[in-house]
Image 1: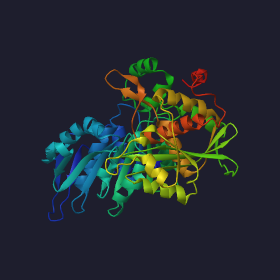
Image 2 (image 1 turned 120 degrees about the horizontal axis):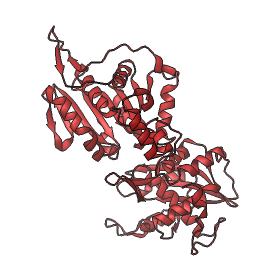
Image 3 (image 1 turned 180 degrees about the vertical axis):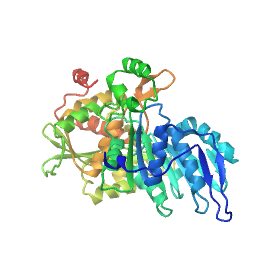
Image 4 (image 1 turned 90 degrees about the horizontal axis):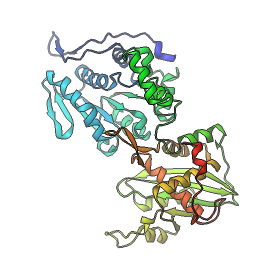
Length: 452
């Protein structure tokens, strides 16, 4: 399986060694870490490759391995003021999942613990915990090494736009770890690491049936309780299972099998629309669509954050979309304190034709998207595929205390694109220009049983 079978050169023990250029002897420090065999394999892979993707079953100890890899690398690093980072999907998850491990395993090193910053300093080295939900906290720093945990729940742009530049000048490394959640960007990373044309990358995969870390009786009981799809995803690391709780994942998978994601030429004699989700302190997303008969053809997608409205108007003009009909959420009418004008007025003053989407519950809007998707086509471009990745990952919020999915969406990196697509579907139908019926009538949701 590609470079998974490359020779492993370093034997990792429960000891970390700190070398000093000024001293001829070395100090051996016990941290209390006793890695299991799969954890040792991950450490060996990190010794041989700069970028490692580790696909791990639940309860394998991937986070413990990740924290100790950071500690080990920090001790071995001979650069000035080494900095390392552990990144979870959210800051809260980083604190809940990894903080106690970091404190526990650095205590023997005499680490100074900065709990308010989720940071430890020891021997001139620093390891910090971050949340991918606050990417600005990672901008502008340098890193000698980084772990991104549960990478399937992290915005795909984080690595290329934020982390990769932070690693560049010091030639830092990155480990991507997680358990599959459908055929998303984590699978893309897995496939990339498997490719022999990427020599700096390595792949490690660990199924529960192979590691034998969990008793077979327990696995059988788990499979019975969880069902085949969830079990295959969580314990047999299957990327084929749908994203649990996803609103649109199964429909998009069906669209892909029917070649609805393909090259599409723009047509002049079509009705042209954009659908927006306006962010205040976070991202703004825009979908670009053409309507041909009963088909919705998605031609482009754009998302950015921390930009003024002028930036998005400029993007529209640059790509020739300024004369389209622009569908925005109802809060576009709210006046801003700084200018006394609403964003509706500001966009109208910029020459855009604005349509305000009908106010509708999120649940009804999701049903509208489900009704629209089967007759939607997506242009196969990198921009549109980024938006599609968001739609695949848009899912219900999980209640960890009750171990059930709530009947409301999880707000994460995928939400803005999903909200913008929902407004697009609602707004297009409001105009009466597609195959849909009067939206004042009850929605026919008989179709949804096919995808539930």
